[in-house]
Length: 119
Image (tube, rainbow, N blue to C red; front, top):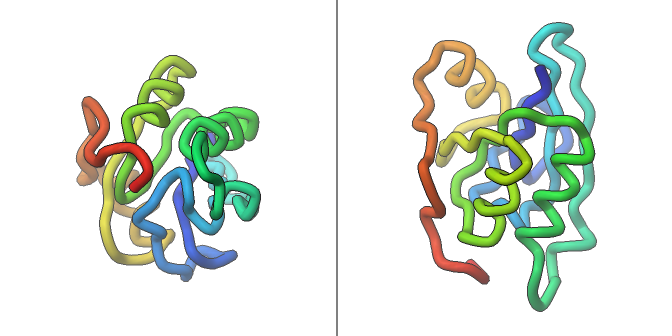
């Protein structure tokens, strides 16, 4: 299974980016093989609107089933949920911390947006 983690860096030791739509990028991690890749999100960093929806499409196109991020807005949440992506929240720590906590079952799954749009 593939999971996406918002990040401000390019590897597993990078900090989690607390934003989703305007995250610097995403680490796509395969829980079965341990393989990972970085997806840049620079096209959405300065978007006037629609960053959450476009970022949701980016991670869904990568084939993820789970997203780990600090915050998610209403439009991104709706898009991800419609695409069958489960969303877990984690603020602080590294990408690797998020992966370990997800595997241990200690992250909180969100049932909705936790910030307003354009956050």
